[in-house]
Length: 424
Image 1 (cartoon, rainbow, N blue to C red):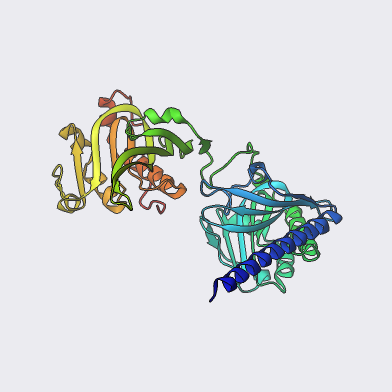
Image 2 (image 1 turned 135 degrees about the vertical axis):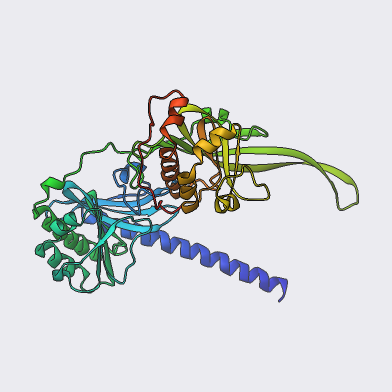
């Protein structure tokens, strides 16, 4: 191919790209105009407040959450609705929702060729006969599902599913949420929203006042962890012991604080820093030169604050080192325990504790002063939840006399039934 031909091809490609871009812009403007002609509002870059009240998947999971194009308005019956593009680490797509008259517990209704949502933790309950085959129902309390799924609600759900590949619907507080609405065409989206509003009408007509949930402040929430709080950045945490101190330009991101129930409070974040070095190289003329190379680094930090100072103790999966020897060879083969005080280690790692550790092998962790520091490997919602459940179970198995020796009047963590922990 000659150079002239190459130039012509490149010019044609650039021209085609420009034409495609112009067509895309025109189509987008026509689409936005069609929305506004219906009296709806279109927001190109909504703030996080648009989804801050939502806490169930696809919301409420992950640290990188981004709302995009947003459509707002009211149905013909005056019911407020929102259709919004949403992206997180675990899901990306469009979500449509209408407002309910009450804040209600979570409920999951999936029918047709759709899959349950990522991260949902609910109990499967039988589908009522009125819904027919092919529906999956999930709820934290089966009694709530039974009271929601009245014959009227089932009739509206079947009508909504007719002619569609499937319906993926949930109750998220005072919002009735459905994945993947037909948002590309306003002439399709309008009737779809009207139909969704009829489902909301039927739910509002059900006797559900005994299930009303309290109002919560609008903020970034975490699914099934109401006491977790998004901080974002807190560089005062850079002085904590596990943070790497070498290098320069240290910073924090995705800082989370919180606790689960009466377990120990935690802090979790990503630590970023840079290192700079000078290296030699040979240039194209054979001369030795030097250059400065800067590398970016990051590490996840996860710590749980204790109510008392404790001697240093470390628990890792067995590697080359064996650590302190315990009476269980099965435990010794699986774990390596090191401690500042061997008696303290034997008091804490007793036979019942060994059984717990072997049944729920944690990532490595160490007790240092009044903190428990994990080596999580990644900074994620699921990892924090798993470590939080694990350490609560671990601490609840420490005998009362140990806590009293540490200066407390009794154990701060009552026994828990934590035979099975949530997945990491």
